[in-house]
Image (cartoon, rainbow, N blue to C red):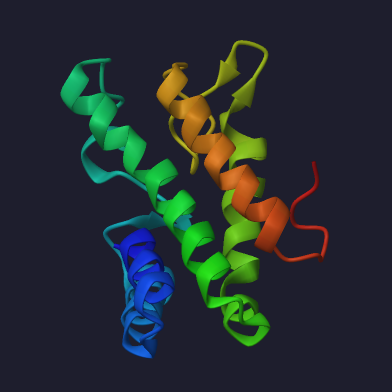
Length: 147
C-alpha cells in the first residue's frame, strides 16, 4: 500500500496519494495493536506461535520486510523532512529491535520482538535488510540504531 501510494504520487504528482499513504503509515505506527508488539512489527499467527517453515508461513514472515521497504519508498517519494520526522524514531526502533533480538551467530531470525525461538531463513534476513536500509536512510539519529 505504501509503495503503491508512493508510485502513484510519483507518476501523477497528486498530493492525495501522499495523504493516503501518510494516513496508512500513521495508523500502522500509532494505531495498530494487531501488527506490533511493544512498538515492534509483529506477525500474529507466526511470530507468536513459532511457525515452522512452510510456504504459507514464509509469506507471513515477509510482511515485515515488505512493510519496511514500503515505508522507505513512501518517504523517498514524499521527500518531506517534517513527514520523515514523524516516523524516524519508529523506523530506527525496528532496526534496533532486530539487532537486539533477531541477530545471532547462526544468522538473522524472523521474529523481531523477542530473542527466541527464532527461525533462521532467507526471508527473515531479507526482511531485516529492508528494515536496516530504511533505518540507515530515515531512522532517528539519536543512538537508537547503529550499523
